[in-house]
Length: 352
Image 1 (spheres, rainbow, N blue to C red):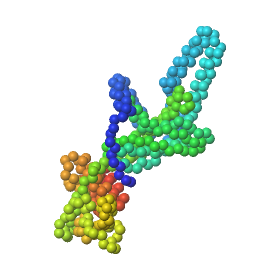
Image 2: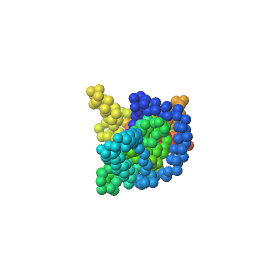
Image 3: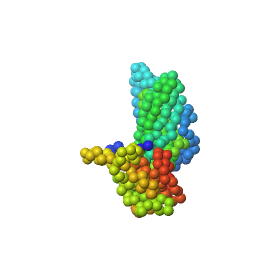
Protein backbone atom coordinates (compact mmCIF):
# COMPACT_ATOMS: atom_id res chain seq x y z
CA UNK A 1 0.00 0.00 0.00
CA UNK A 2 1.46 3.37 -0.96
CA UNK A 3 1.66 6.01 1.76
CA UNK A 4 -1.04 8.62 1.84
CA UNK A 5 -0.05 12.16 2.71
CA UNK A 6 -2.09 13.75 5.51
CA UNK A 7 -4.94 15.85 4.28
CA UNK A 8 -4.93 19.56 4.96
CA UNK A 9 -7.95 20.82 6.86
CA UNK A 10 -9.95 23.43 4.96
CA UNK A 11 -13.00 25.23 6.28
CA UNK A 12 -15.91 24.92 3.85
CA UNK A 13 -19.46 26.32 4.12
CA UNK A 14 -20.76 22.79 4.75
CA UNK A 15 -18.38 22.18 7.66
CA UNK A 16 -19.11 25.64 9.09
CA UNK A 17 -22.84 24.96 8.94
CA UNK A 18 -22.28 21.58 10.63
CA UNK A 19 -20.32 23.23 13.44
CA UNK A 20 -23.08 25.82 13.88
CA UNK A 21 -25.74 23.09 14.13
CA UNK A 22 -23.58 21.19 16.63
CA UNK A 23 -23.15 24.35 18.72
CA UNK A 24 -26.90 25.00 18.69
CA UNK A 25 -27.62 21.38 19.63
CA UNK A 26 -25.19 21.60 22.57
CA UNK A 27 -27.30 24.44 24.02
CA UNK A 28 -30.39 22.25 24.12
CA UNK A 29 -30.92 21.05 27.73
CA UNK A 30 -32.25 17.71 26.44
CA UNK A 31 -29.09 16.97 24.45
CA UNK A 32 -27.16 15.28 27.34
CA UNK A 33 -30.19 13.13 28.19
CA UNK A 34 -30.64 12.15 24.56
CA UNK A 35 -26.93 11.35 24.22
CA UNK A 36 -26.92 9.14 27.33
CA UNK A 37 -29.99 7.27 26.12
CA UNK A 38 -28.46 6.82 22.67
CA UNK A 39 -25.19 5.46 24.12
CA UNK A 40 -27.13 3.04 26.35
CA UNK A 41 -29.28 1.90 23.45
CA UNK A 42 -26.34 1.50 21.05
CA UNK A 43 -24.41 -0.56 23.62
CA UNK A 44 -27.23 -3.12 23.63
CA UNK A 45 -26.96 -3.73 19.89
CA UNK A 46 -24.80 -6.72 18.84
CA UNK A 47 -21.51 -6.33 16.94
CA UNK A 48 -21.55 -7.97 13.51
CA UNK A 49 -19.94 -7.38 10.11
CA UNK A 50 -23.09 -8.72 8.38
CA UNK A 51 -26.58 -7.42 9.14
CA UNK A 52 -29.90 -8.51 7.63
CA UNK A 53 -32.64 -5.91 8.03
CA UNK A 54 -35.99 -7.16 9.34
CA UNK A 55 -39.01 -5.58 11.01
CA UNK A 56 -37.19 -5.81 14.36
CA UNK A 57 -34.31 -3.50 13.42
CA UNK A 58 -35.90 -1.12 10.88
CA UNK A 59 -37.63 2.04 12.11
CA UNK A 60 -39.98 4.50 10.41
CA UNK A 61 -41.19 8.02 11.17
CA UNK A 62 -42.69 10.86 9.09
CA UNK A 63 -40.29 13.48 7.77
CA UNK A 64 -40.88 17.22 7.91
CA UNK A 65 -42.57 16.97 4.51
CA UNK A 66 -44.71 14.14 5.84
CA UNK A 67 -45.94 16.21 8.80
CA UNK A 68 -46.68 19.09 6.44
CA UNK A 69 -48.66 16.74 4.20
CA UNK A 70 -50.63 15.50 7.22
CA UNK A 71 -51.46 19.10 8.20
CA UNK A 72 -52.53 19.87 4.63
CA UNK A 73 -54.80 16.82 4.55
CA UNK A 74 -56.34 17.87 7.85
CA UNK A 75 -57.10 21.36 6.48
CA UNK A 76 -58.57 19.83 3.29
CA UNK A 77 -60.73 17.47 5.31
CA UNK A 78 -62.06 20.25 7.57
CA UNK A 79 -62.78 22.47 4.55
CA UNK A 80 -64.54 19.61 2.73
CA UNK A 81 -66.74 18.88 5.75
CA UNK A 82 -67.52 22.56 6.30
CA UNK A 83 -68.46 23.30 2.69
CA UNK A 84 -69.69 19.79 1.75
CA UNK A 85 -67.24 19.50 -1.16
CA UNK A 86 -67.37 16.05 -2.73
CA UNK A 87 -64.33 16.77 -4.87
CA UNK A 88 -62.57 17.91 -1.72
CA UNK A 89 -63.28 14.55 -0.10
CA UNK A 90 -61.97 12.82 -3.23
CA UNK A 91 -58.74 14.81 -3.25
CA UNK A 92 -58.20 14.37 0.49
CA UNK A 93 -58.64 10.62 0.51
CA UNK A 94 -56.67 10.22 -2.72
CA UNK A 95 -53.67 12.02 -1.21
CA UNK A 96 -54.04 10.14 2.08
CA UNK A 97 -54.17 6.79 0.26
CA UNK A 98 -51.06 7.70 -1.73
CA UNK A 99 -49.24 8.58 1.50
CA UNK A 100 -50.21 5.25 3.10
CA UNK A 101 -49.06 3.28 0.05
CA UNK A 102 -45.83 5.28 0.01
CA UNK A 103 -45.27 4.40 3.68
CA UNK A 104 -45.46 0.66 2.94
CA UNK A 105 -43.20 0.98 -0.14
CA UNK A 106 -40.67 3.03 1.85
CA UNK A 107 -40.51 0.45 4.66
CA UNK A 108 -40.23 -2.45 2.19
CA UNK A 109 -37.35 -0.70 0.37
CA UNK A 110 -35.04 -1.12 3.36
CA UNK A 111 -36.54 -4.25 4.89
CA UNK A 112 -34.99 -7.48 3.64
CA UNK A 113 -31.61 -6.19 2.43
CA UNK A 114 -28.30 -7.54 3.77
CA UNK A 115 -25.36 -5.29 4.66
CA UNK A 116 -21.84 -6.75 4.66
CA UNK A 117 -18.68 -4.85 5.58
CA UNK A 118 -15.41 -5.80 3.89
CA UNK A 119 -12.32 -5.84 6.11
CA UNK A 120 -10.83 -2.30 5.94
CA UNK A 121 -7.21 -1.77 4.94
CA UNK A 122 -4.83 0.10 7.27
CA UNK A 123 -4.63 3.82 6.68
CA UNK A 124 -2.31 6.67 7.62
CA UNK A 125 -3.53 9.23 10.13
CA UNK A 126 -4.77 12.37 8.42
CA UNK A 127 -6.39 10.46 5.56
CA UNK A 128 -9.96 9.19 5.39
CA UNK A 129 -10.48 5.51 6.07
CA UNK A 130 -12.75 4.12 3.35
CA UNK A 131 -15.28 1.46 4.36
CA UNK A 132 -16.68 -0.68 1.57
CA UNK A 133 -20.18 -2.01 2.28
CA UNK A 134 -21.94 -4.52 0.05
CA UNK A 135 -25.72 -4.11 -0.10
CA UNK A 136 -27.45 -7.23 -1.44
CA UNK A 137 -31.10 -8.00 -2.12
CA UNK A 138 -32.95 -11.20 -2.99
CA UNK A 139 -36.14 -9.43 -4.05
CA UNK A 140 -37.23 -9.70 -7.70
CA UNK A 141 -37.66 -5.94 -8.01
CA UNK A 142 -34.94 -3.28 -7.62
CA UNK A 143 -34.60 -1.02 -4.59
CA UNK A 144 -33.98 2.69 -5.04
CA UNK A 145 -32.55 5.51 -2.97
CA UNK A 146 -30.67 3.68 -0.19
CA UNK A 147 -28.09 5.76 1.65
CA UNK A 148 -25.34 4.85 4.12
CA UNK A 149 -23.35 7.13 6.41
CA UNK A 150 -21.36 7.18 9.61
CA UNK A 151 -23.68 7.88 12.52
CA UNK A 152 -22.41 11.08 14.15
CA UNK A 153 -23.20 12.77 17.40
CA UNK A 154 -26.22 14.96 18.04
CA UNK A 155 -26.24 18.00 15.75
CA UNK A 156 -23.58 16.72 13.33
CA UNK A 157 -24.64 16.27 9.69
CA UNK A 158 -24.41 12.92 7.94
CA UNK A 159 -22.37 12.55 4.75
CA UNK A 160 -24.51 10.13 2.77
CA UNK A 161 -23.42 7.72 0.04
CA UNK A 162 -26.45 6.75 -2.06
CA UNK A 163 -27.01 3.70 -4.24
CA UNK A 164 -29.66 1.62 -5.99
CA UNK A 165 -29.71 -2.15 -5.55
CA UNK A 166 -30.68 -4.19 -8.64
CA UNK A 167 -33.18 -7.02 -8.50
CA UNK A 168 -31.63 -10.14 -6.91
CA UNK A 169 -28.24 -8.41 -7.03
CA UNK A 170 -25.86 -6.34 -4.98
CA UNK A 171 -24.31 -2.90 -4.94
CA UNK A 172 -21.14 -1.56 -3.35
CA UNK A 173 -21.11 1.62 -1.29
CA UNK A 174 -18.01 3.38 0.06
CA UNK A 175 -18.33 5.32 3.31
CA UNK A 176 -15.43 7.35 4.71
CA UNK A 177 -14.53 8.50 8.20
CA UNK A 178 -11.41 10.22 9.56
CA UNK A 179 -9.85 8.64 12.69
CA UNK A 180 -8.66 11.20 15.21
CA UNK A 181 -5.49 9.37 16.31
CA UNK A 182 -3.21 6.48 15.41
CA UNK A 183 -3.76 2.96 16.70
CA UNK A 184 -6.43 0.29 16.41
CA UNK A 185 -9.95 1.71 16.08
CA UNK A 186 -13.32 0.02 16.08
CA UNK A 187 -15.46 0.87 13.07
CA UNK A 188 -18.00 3.54 14.12
CA UNK A 189 -21.72 2.94 14.09
CA UNK A 190 -23.20 3.13 10.59
CA UNK A 191 -26.71 4.11 9.61
CA UNK A 192 -28.74 3.18 6.52
CA UNK A 193 -31.71 5.23 5.37
CA UNK A 194 -34.25 5.60 2.59
CA UNK A 195 -37.07 8.06 1.85
CA UNK A 196 -38.19 6.50 -1.40
CA UNK A 197 -40.66 7.03 -3.06
CA UNK A 198 -42.38 10.22 -1.83
CA UNK A 199 -40.02 11.55 0.82
CA UNK A 200 -42.84 11.75 3.37
CA UNK A 201 -41.45 8.94 5.55
CA UNK A 202 -37.94 8.20 6.77
CA UNK A 203 -36.96 4.56 7.24
CA UNK A 204 -33.63 3.92 8.91
CA UNK A 205 -31.54 1.45 10.88
CA UNK A 206 -28.35 1.45 12.96
CA UNK A 207 -25.49 -1.00 12.48
CA UNK A 208 -22.49 -1.67 14.74
CA UNK A 209 -19.77 -3.53 12.76
CA UNK A 210 -17.35 -5.73 14.66
CA UNK A 211 -14.34 -4.98 12.42
CA UNK A 212 -11.45 -2.74 13.41
CA UNK A 213 -9.17 -0.53 11.34
CA UNK A 214 -5.48 0.09 12.01
CA UNK A 215 -4.34 3.70 11.63
CA UNK A 216 -0.63 4.24 10.98
CA UNK A 217 1.11 7.41 12.21
CA UNK A 218 1.29 10.25 9.73
CA UNK A 219 4.80 10.43 8.19
CA UNK A 220 6.79 13.62 8.61
CA UNK A 221 6.69 15.79 5.49
CA UNK A 222 9.15 16.38 3.94
CA UNK A 223 10.98 13.20 4.91
CA UNK A 224 14.34 13.90 6.67
CA UNK A 225 17.54 12.06 5.62
CA UNK A 226 18.03 8.57 7.00
CA UNK A 227 20.27 8.27 10.08
CA UNK A 228 23.77 6.83 9.98
CA UNK A 229 24.21 3.07 10.05
CA UNK A 230 25.61 1.11 12.96
CA UNK A 231 28.69 -1.17 12.65
CA UNK A 232 27.82 -4.85 12.42
CA UNK A 233 28.91 -7.44 14.95
CA UNK A 234 32.29 -6.62 16.51
CA UNK A 235 32.46 -3.34 14.66
CA UNK A 236 34.12 -4.35 11.42
CA UNK A 237 34.78 -1.41 9.21
CA UNK A 238 36.38 1.91 9.90
CA UNK A 239 33.59 4.27 10.86
CA UNK A 240 29.80 4.52 10.67
CA UNK A 241 28.46 5.73 7.37
CA UNK A 242 27.19 9.27 7.26
CA UNK A 243 23.46 9.85 6.85
CA UNK A 244 23.21 10.90 3.23
CA UNK A 245 19.59 9.99 2.61
CA UNK A 246 20.19 6.55 1.09
CA UNK A 247 22.29 5.00 3.97
CA UNK A 248 24.35 2.77 1.64
CA UNK A 249 27.51 4.12 0.05
CA UNK A 250 27.32 4.68 -3.68
CA UNK A 251 29.81 4.43 -6.51
CA UNK A 252 29.82 4.78 -10.25
CA UNK A 253 27.89 2.12 -12.15
CA UNK A 254 29.99 -0.76 -13.45
CA UNK A 255 29.02 -3.00 -16.32
CA UNK A 256 27.52 -6.18 -14.89
CA UNK A 257 26.15 -4.63 -11.66
CA UNK A 258 22.73 -6.11 -10.75
CA UNK A 259 19.84 -3.75 -11.53
CA UNK A 260 18.64 -3.98 -7.92
CA UNK A 261 21.86 -2.19 -6.82
CA UNK A 262 21.22 0.81 -9.10
CA UNK A 263 20.04 3.87 -7.17
CA UNK A 264 17.13 4.73 -9.44
CA UNK A 265 16.24 7.86 -7.49
CA UNK A 266 19.65 9.38 -8.28
CA UNK A 267 19.35 8.11 -11.85
CA UNK A 268 16.06 9.98 -12.26
CA UNK A 269 17.66 13.17 -10.94
CA UNK A 270 20.58 12.74 -13.37
CA UNK A 271 18.21 12.34 -16.29
CA UNK A 272 16.34 15.42 -15.14
CA UNK A 273 19.54 17.48 -15.27
CA UNK A 274 20.45 16.22 -18.74
CA UNK A 275 23.08 13.63 -17.77
CA UNK A 276 22.86 9.85 -17.93
CA UNK A 277 25.24 8.95 -15.07
CA UNK A 278 24.22 5.86 -13.14
CA UNK A 279 25.34 5.01 -9.63
CA UNK A 280 25.18 1.72 -7.72
CA UNK A 281 25.12 0.94 -4.03
CA UNK A 282 28.40 -0.13 -2.50
CA UNK A 283 27.58 -3.60 -1.27
CA UNK A 284 30.86 -3.84 0.66
CA UNK A 285 29.95 -0.82 2.77
CA UNK A 286 26.44 -2.28 3.25
CA UNK A 287 28.02 -5.43 4.67
CA UNK A 288 29.90 -3.38 7.30
CA UNK A 289 26.93 -1.39 8.56
CA UNK A 290 23.25 -1.96 9.22
CA UNK A 291 20.44 0.56 9.49
CA UNK A 292 18.55 0.75 12.79
CA UNK A 293 15.68 3.20 13.28
CA UNK A 294 15.39 4.32 16.88
CA UNK A 295 13.36 7.14 18.55
CA UNK A 296 16.61 8.40 20.11
CA UNK A 297 17.92 9.21 16.62
CA UNK A 298 14.88 11.38 15.85
CA UNK A 299 16.16 14.14 18.21
CA UNK A 300 12.69 15.63 18.75
CA UNK A 301 11.12 16.52 22.12
CA UNK A 302 7.56 15.53 21.22
CA UNK A 303 6.95 11.73 21.34
CA UNK A 304 4.39 11.88 18.53
CA UNK A 305 6.80 13.87 16.37
CA UNK A 306 9.43 11.17 16.91
CA UNK A 307 6.94 8.49 15.85
CA UNK A 308 6.09 10.57 12.77
CA UNK A 309 9.78 10.84 11.84
CA UNK A 310 10.32 7.10 12.32
CA UNK A 311 7.35 6.46 10.03
CA UNK A 312 8.90 8.67 7.34
CA UNK A 313 12.22 6.80 7.71
CA UNK A 314 10.50 3.42 7.37
CA UNK A 315 8.77 4.51 4.16
CA UNK A 316 11.98 6.02 2.79
CA UNK A 317 14.10 2.94 3.56
CA UNK A 318 11.45 0.69 2.03
CA UNK A 319 11.29 2.85 -1.10
CA UNK A 320 15.07 2.57 -1.48
CA UNK A 321 15.01 -1.20 -0.96
CA UNK A 322 17.31 -1.13 2.11
CA UNK A 323 17.51 -3.59 4.98
CA UNK A 324 16.44 -1.77 8.14
CA UNK A 325 15.44 -2.60 11.69
CA UNK A 326 13.21 -0.82 14.19
CA UNK A 327 13.77 -0.36 17.91
CA UNK A 328 10.90 0.79 20.14
CA UNK A 329 10.35 0.54 23.90
CA UNK A 330 9.64 -3.14 24.47
CA UNK A 331 9.65 -3.97 20.74
CA UNK A 332 12.50 -4.75 18.35
CA UNK A 333 11.99 -5.67 14.69
CA UNK A 334 15.06 -7.31 13.17
CA UNK A 335 16.52 -5.79 9.97
CA UNK A 336 14.81 -6.95 6.80
CA UNK A 337 13.05 -5.50 3.77
CA UNK A 338 9.95 -5.99 1.67
CA UNK A 339 6.21 -5.21 2.03
CA UNK A 340 5.68 -7.64 4.93
CA UNK A 341 8.55 -6.09 6.91
CA UNK A 342 7.24 -2.57 6.20
CA UNK A 343 3.80 -3.61 7.47
CA UNK A 344 5.30 -5.06 10.67
CA UNK A 345 7.21 -1.85 11.34
CA UNK A 346 4.21 0.40 10.66
CA UNK A 347 2.01 -1.75 12.90
CA UNK A 348 4.59 -1.50 15.69
CA UNK A 349 4.68 2.29 15.30
CA UNK A 350 0.89 2.51 15.29
CA UNK A 351 0.47 0.45 18.46
CA UNK A 352 3.45 1.65 20.50
